[in-house]
Image 1 (cartoon, helix red, strand yellow):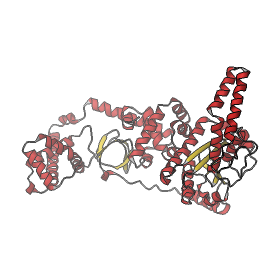
Image 2 (cartoon, rainbow over the protein chains, first blue to last red; image 1 turned 90 degrees about the horizontal axis):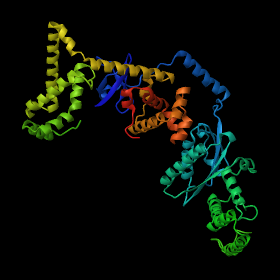
Image 3 (cartoon, rainbow over the protein chains, first blue to last red; image 1 turned 30 degrees about the horizontal axis):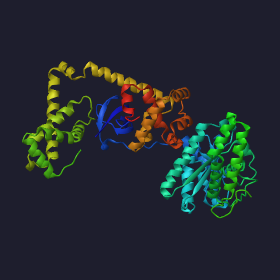
Image 4 (cartoon, rainbow over the protein chains, first blue to last red; image 1 turned 180 degrees about the vertical axis):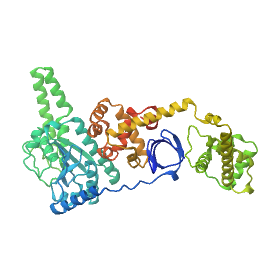
Length: 300
Length: 226
């Protein structure tokens, strides 16, 4: 037995506001008046009335269907392009989102992604597309052991840049990944790379996702590497992310920060030279350490 | 309503008829929906929560049935149905008779002024609410289909509506443009666009009810959680 307040009385039924805050359509009974609070039961529900379609609407719908049959589907909406989100696991893909956070265009960047992508996802909300796409990725065995996923972000128009929007999209990605982690029962590492305008425009190879491009540019900028990165399209993303994280960690190591702080504090040249000498000796020690594969490949 | 086995009911009836008032109270509470349903069927009207003479008669009759019921008379429900029905018919006859003799006395049965005033106020609230919804092209008749089927979703949307109505910036934009500022809400409230799109009309109805509805409407739409 539930309670509701009568808000509208129609010819065939009435509409009431349920105590829980929902609206219900109930059958008419004696003595009804708007504003009354009544008890009602499941038996009192009225099914949705079938609305008759006016003749003019039916003709218009028929014309649209005929038009679409003859000239193909209508182009997708007047949505405003907002941002580009790339995702690399091994399949590498880019999604273009509009300001309603729906995917209006997608570019599978390698054969694996081309095999998995489904055109029907165009026009759907990004969250749904990402969930569906990752489900296919998982079903095809790309989520194995402890995978790492790279998300790249670039604005399509500079004026749309906003921290709130960026954190919202990142939030969607994190949420979908958490759900995937639960489902796949694996730890999934995520790296988010925001690519600025100049980096985005400098992308020389369109087959490299913005995320991967941003990652390579950053790795190059980290002074620990000498010369261009030995990147090959088949380099797996986990290796790249791990390398990037190592480089970043070493560049931002505590002793380096201390050095910067001292410079700002105007320490004497002598002390700085002494520090440099200390750094050089510690660097040479680090350089002698081979990596897990037994190669000393950080400085080639 | 709690359904009990026949033995269970018979045990409880024995206790009640032996003078256990606590058990009587619990049983009356358990069978309240049954009484409401019977009264509604007999009167062909919904039982009002605030003022229903028929419900009082029905409850009294059910209470009386508890004293007089014997297991050999069949089930309690079957017996109580007959008692409630007879008592309502008696009351109806009594009332009609009185009304034909002294018609002025019938006026006493009308709701007192306070109730009239209250009902008028609620109707004004509903009328105002209807007009506000029209600005967003929403009719009351659209809303039952727009109401989510799951109580949890309704609960979540009530919380969201409550947060939105407390946000001056969003409310200003919504009232000025006559549209739900989905993008702003998605970003500020950390809610997915899909939810906003799927439940747009219901959400607007809640927000408008909270914002411009009166006390009664707000009472229905306010979330218990914040």
